[in-house]
Length: 219
Image 1 (cartoon, rainbow, N blue to C red):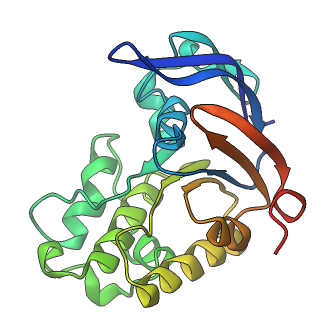
Image 2 (image 1 turned 45 degrees about the horizontal axis):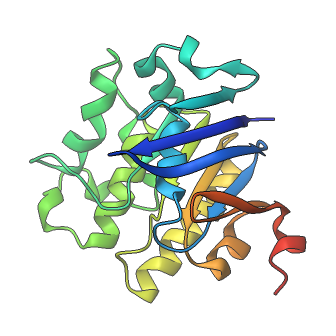
């Protein structure tokens, strides 16, 4: 099992966001689905220690993630946030940003290609790109870390239908090109069917379903 959550409870400002969650996420393409406010993004943040539970244990590949250095873990389990958060400069500057903190130089042509862009984007001003293109830059920046897991927090929620379809196609294509697992957060059950083989359904901070997508979310 890639991730295991055992009796996990998380509170924010005294309010329970996740309550007593025990569930697993296998390697491959998984999804955490549910309505707004169900705790999906919070659960995702627990998987690479952007937050720690108040109670319970989160395990990654069998080990308590609290035993892992947070920065090392986040290089291996890399988050693509819901909205682009780019630094000032070119696409290349943005892709290099996190990798240089690790003392490495990324293969820019390869990672922008993996993210669905061509090499002509490398020298373009990131601020002048469409939101869909900026989201691909965020994906390229995460891929430059050569992660074993990508955490995708509603990566298409701010995009129009055409841009959403293009990003989804890129994510599906990645599964054929890289040995990387994905955990997608979405409120869109149709998107969960398209992009995930396993789904965990949340509602009001509790697990209400977990299993193969084709069984839990039949078309």
